Amino acid sequence: MEGNKKYVCIEDYALIVADWHQFDRALWEKIVVSLEGLTKLVGISASRMDTQLFLGNYKITPFGVHVDAASAFHFPIIGKKIIRFWPDSYAQKNPALHHARNYARFLENSSVIKAVPGQAIYWPSNYWHIGEGDGTLIEEIIFLFSP
Image (cartoon, rainbow, N blue to C red; front, side, top):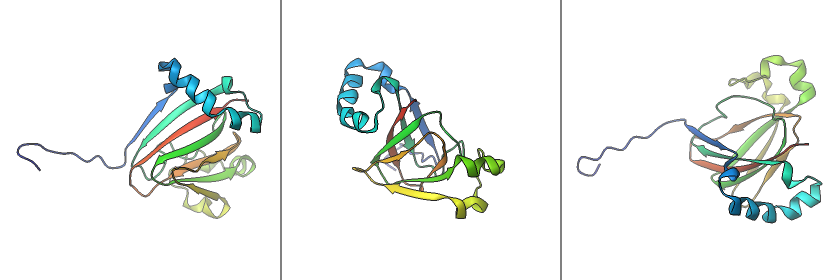
């Protein structure tokens, strides 16, 4: 510590900012242009896109295993991103998985994808998932595409 300054380290936090593109038209236009090739390739309109920013040192997504109403592309900016997935058919047969933060008994039926800055992770809207980390800083941008 320097002089009288005190530093506080918050353990296991997540800051999630949804729809941040709505606050800056110029930024939104740059995002649309940047993702134009991707949206054409996968046949999704950028006009149906939402944005999310996750920042934190959390070990798992704070709200547990969940499913989104939209398909998602994750782009890690800082740190390694790990996403664990279960197909909807499995989640429907195992309702205890829904919003679970303790999901150890379901691990053998999951799939894992990892990405670092410069890589991306994609999954369709019908996959249940949870983000995992090692407690170090993670920052990622997520683009959600509604059908």
